[in-house]
Amino acid sequence: MKNNFIYSSRASSCRNKRYHTYDYYLNQKYGVKTAKIALNAGFSCPHLDINGKGCIYCGEKYRNKSNNLLSPQEIISQFHEKKAALSKKWKNTKYIAYFQAGSNTFAPVEELKKVYESVLTLENLAGIDIATRPDCITREIAEELGVLNLKTDVTVELGLQTRHDKTAQFINRGYNLEVFETAYKLLAEYKIPAAIHIINSLPHETPEMMVETAKYIADLKPLPLGVKIHMLYVDENTELRDLYNSGEIKLLSKEEYINIVVSQLEYLPPQIVIMRLTGDPEIQKNDAESPTPFWVQKKFAVINDIDKLLEKRGTYQGRLSGVETTPSTAAPSPPLHGGESLTNILSMAKRLLDVSIRENGVYADFTMGKGNDTLYIKKACPSGKIYAFDIQKEAVEITAKRLEHENCLDENVYLIHDSHANFKKYIPENTELDGAIFNLGYLPGGDKSITTQTDSTLDCLKDALDILKAGGVIVISVYPGHEEGTKEGEKILDFAKNLDRKQFDCLYHRLINIPEAPFIIAFQKKTLTKE
Image (cartoon, rainbow, N blue to C red; front, side):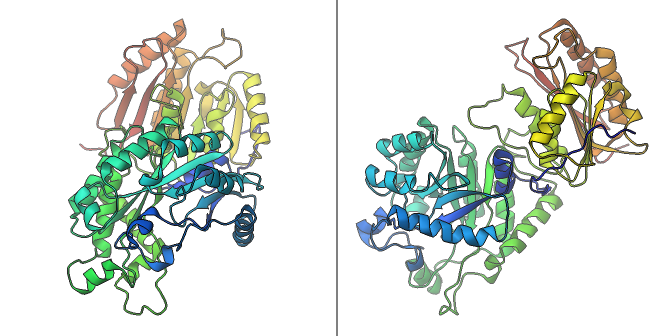
């Protein structure tokens, strides 16, 4: 077998998760490891200004006593100090300036501009992340954030904590759900992505109430970019600590927490990035009797147990959301990026293919084109092997140049100038495919008279299904906007309808009011074949 071209990817390794991880999202967006640098710019909180107490769980270490904002030079110095530590761990890294401490929109707009713009010229800055309260978002502030979003990627993190106003009143959150919804709609109006914080184990909330908060987030329009979930912490010298000591409240056990998180994930649509599943609180050294459970401090052990329970229950992010339509056995579906929708068939195809992504997997791009899908697969799983086919030499050359430009060349990728119908000549005998993709039609910008053909496509599909691994996925994007494309679509649909349902699940996704629009047919081989 001839190795036509080789490339390597520097993308982060495939984590084989059943939910949409933040690390995966950042790597797909920026192409390199991207780290957040937490900054304390000196912001206080309006809730502290009003009653001097804040939320009942707000400890001293999370507070800035007053709104004494740092100068741009002080913020830059803080950024560089933390970047220096991270750069020893990761090379070729981009950074997000994360304004974390306090309510980071609690200041006049002119003061906010000075703070945010102080970091814009920093080297390798990927974007700005701003944590704040919903009652600190006004139209004027949202408009300014919209302007900032034209200069760099901006995300705003809103502290919701719970959808239940009764709980919010008990914890002295300081605003009701209507205030959150107003802020959320303002951010959406100015096209600013939002992430939402929620807390599990809030006083008097049942597991069902906590899951209801996740369901509420799942119904927001537009969907948030991300969600952060963590356990309630009980710090010393807080009203929450007094309630705990009096026996009025209790905290979730590790097993209870993990079960609730898994149930919440099931309702969160797969487009939503899971930015945090638990925290790693620092217990005060002089607080030897802290009620915060020891297990909460073992962040990676908790995440590992969440992974295990997802697998044990055979579930995944979005299973009950009404969005994901194909069972997930591995990595989650990546998001539709800003401004995209279900009409973007190519994004939908990639999301379905991502179900099959697993470490050291074997994949086929049966219609190489300009290399979009080949590059996508390699970045999703750098350890995998990829066989990409096209009958046009131009396509192979374009793909090779693109991969070289992305610093993506290694011995595990084969760019093959031949019909996909002949793929068995190139893929070693007894090899099983984890996944494959077809993007039928003609080379974009190329000769439109040269298209994929019905007979060769069907021959390739049948042979590929024969060697598809259990749980593997084949996704086909069909373009019926020309005569051969219409024929291909009809024949593949007929073939899919007659497949043995004991062996394969088949999905059909189409815009029923636009018959000439591209559509998707996807196949997944069942893990178990029932007699």
